[in-house]
Image (cartoon, rainbow, N blue to C red; front, top):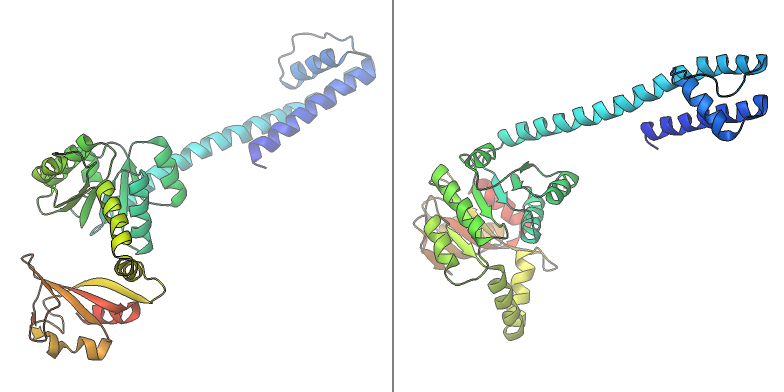
Length: 328
């Protein structure tokens, strides 16, 4: 039981004790005894409603010594709890803002609805840094319970995006429920950070995707279209979709599809797929190579060069992938 509740319970016990004392010593009613107790320990002293005998006066003096001190103690504890709670809330907000300000190469998730919750769960599982922007009180409460970094406010507001570190972020994901709000968020983010990677959610309504792309989004996805497409593929190609699901989610096969960016000073830079010995040394399959210009080469042959800035899509055991990532 928390301190304020314990203090309140003890206060009630003293009131009942005082009322019962007057009932026994002065043959008063419970209400008159309670009234006498209350005006005594509160030091109000409106006057005696119960005629006090010598024993009653002694009891009253004891009640004053015990009750007044305790009442002061109770109110001190209640005030302390209220002030402490407010101070903790203020400190929590300041600490949150400080942690968000220190972020870099992170992701900004605008909206913590059903889609935003799934996205943040996956980002957290992959140990990626992110901050969520939302203005819904229930969403803010849940974010606090989960321990995620968040900012309360409108994600389309320039100041809010700057507080979230839009100029230092790896990417922004706009997944609020309104298409119009997503357009405003994309416009604001693109104006503040011209090179930022922006992904936006679309409701699937005709023309929305074009507007989001014009606003500056790099990628626009419709959850409804993706969900319908995936359901159709599960019916038409169940084995293929099951395999993809297992490799993407690190399932029972123990395999993962991952992408690795080739650095300028990496050991694989300017080597061919054969010279890199990725298959021999790491038992990984190079499924595709995406060039820095955006060109995608699927199933590259052994003579294909691996260049700085390329992104390799590899399939294999997760531990092997992590080993390759360290030298690439």
